[in-house]
Length: 621
Image (cartoon, rainbow, N blue to C red; front, side, top):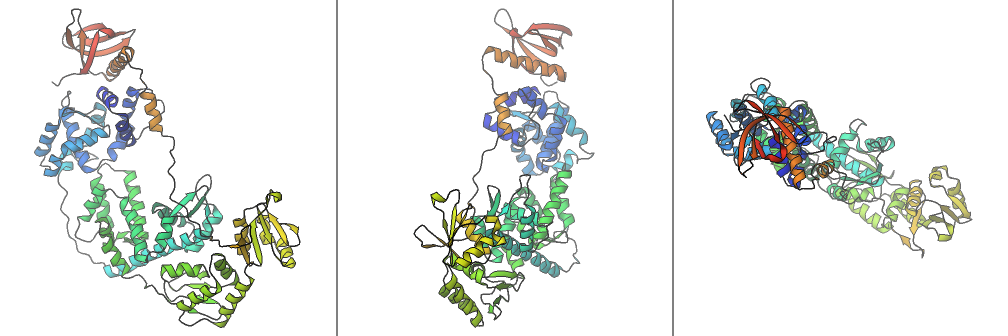
């Protein structure tokens, strides 16, 4: 523990903070660097760190620990490399041993200084007994990766490819519908976490998924940066808006890239080395081979990974398909081409019908679909989607800046059947009635009201005042042509629009203002949270300096050695100014004095701490 505590003291604060981030421990109760070193060498902390070492680092650590177990003075980098050569390790492992030892030192598992390697006794006792038992032996860990055996494949891969493509397309389509619905109405995040139930039901229905599957769909969109939280609400992000205009293949690529980025690069290379068909058993074997000390965290991670792979068309019924191997190998475009070959073809024409419905015979091109949704409501979501035009949907389009002419021109260019007379009549009538109800900011004299609603039609104003569907915005009539609300003009506007009134927004001068409901959330601002590691370092590195601090440090070193029953080389200042080295086993430190057993003279010595110049680990031998 002494070497680790000394190493903690030497490290710059930034390096120490980074190293501690890679370890699991509870910082409460840590008052100094010795407490921290002791905690890092606790069995739970060491087991957690060992279980997350990949095979190369674990091989080097096993060799170093084995050498250190038989040598109290530790070992050297050259000794480790020599032992790896004796074990017939691969050349790249032997040549990379020094770098791997440095990485292990960076994780505060060992101490490397001047090419000497100190492996704490606590770590040796946790690792060495497991080698050859529940862990591979050092020789097995150091051995090169086994060759891949090519096995016969009796499964009809074309069927799996089609099913994987269907799953991938369904996920892309569901994600697109999720974003579209968030654009219409944000979803509220509960204080305890998770979406509010009414919003969850709404989003599940819109995306065609179950309530149980919605969290995974939403989390996937969040990981890809397609949604963003603003306050207590989730909205479509600006990245999501760009993604929504991509082709189905482009949308899938973004989701697959995020899935791949969650997998460590060496593991991706390990799996991608296979030239035969990748199976779930092979994938699990590869992962467990790569993380020999894994455990529950690894199995749980594999289950989640394969579950996500299923949704992205990278696996079918738990079995990875070729696209999965291609993604892991970094050939995302090739994988996308394989899957997209079975995607339904996009269309750029629709059928306009006399009952005011619009039928798309296939997935509509994203840019056309986005504009059509601004004019019509989606009724049926499938490969052949159905939209419905209504007075309210046309009013919504007019409020967003469309005109009767632009709507009819767009629909005419989109239609395979021309524009039916009922549809043309509806658009014209909606344009005439548009603005019969006006919403604007209330005057200061109307406070606390924030929005003012006016109409030349007195009967319409009275209807608004008693409409129970508008009770949530608390309309209060203040005159025959006017109502007030305590809510903001945009909230009132969209409430009236949803209630199918011919509403328009206006400014103080009475000019119509174009509103868009689809508001995007900007990239989230990273907020700095309280960092427990930083608070810990503030505490343990707060040293005033000077002789008193050095005496306290010396005392803690000796106390730690006494508890661990370690033998030290203690350098003592002699009366004439010279120094002398003693091989001592500290027994206790009290009242400014050290009581220790002299290993060479086999007598007990008592020394004042002020006479001790330094301490160091006992030499090998």
